[in-house]
Length: 116
Length: 114
Image (cartoon, rainbow over all chains, first blue to last red; front, side, top):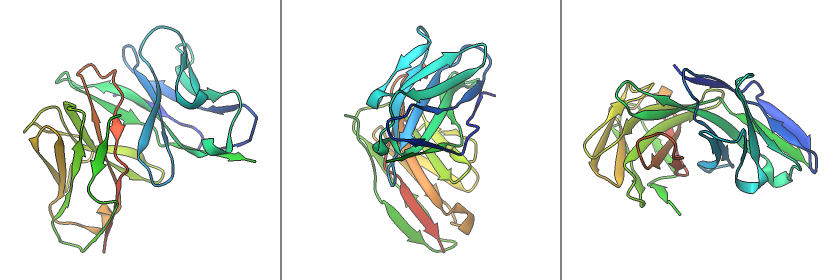
């Protein structure tokens, strides 16, 4: 089965510094990878996805992610963090079922805290 | 913008009650999903649906059922609520069949079973 791992429960960074939220994946075949963000008392919002093509994917709110096949990683990055980036971040991978349908498998989430 | 609306933000029910959680999407999406979110466990898929009157079990279907009588509406049913079903429940929808389209989420229902 496909899976993703987010090794850090929490990441702390000062405003203005670069941030990285880590994700590694385990899949058979080509991975479809996603990042979502969840602000307090809200549902998840889509940030970006990797299906194929360039290894550096750009998404919403200035975020980007780097797909690295040799390291089986898909880390989320931003050059300069904002306090408003503080939220819960989820990595997810597509799981293709025997029926031909698909579902997403989510990581356990990483809480990002950006201090002023 | 896609809008996924969950009928209640907060809900308190008693053990043994039958509980209905409703979800409506306005973008004619084929696919709809129910998740529960618990601290340290991330999101876990309960049930999903790829068409009207069609349903598939997710990873943790025990104690739940679903109904999809219309394309825009997907209901989650707790047949006999128990305290271990206290959680945040999230509904999502997406288009297409290839798995390359993002899911759009509602704001969640925080359900407490007393």
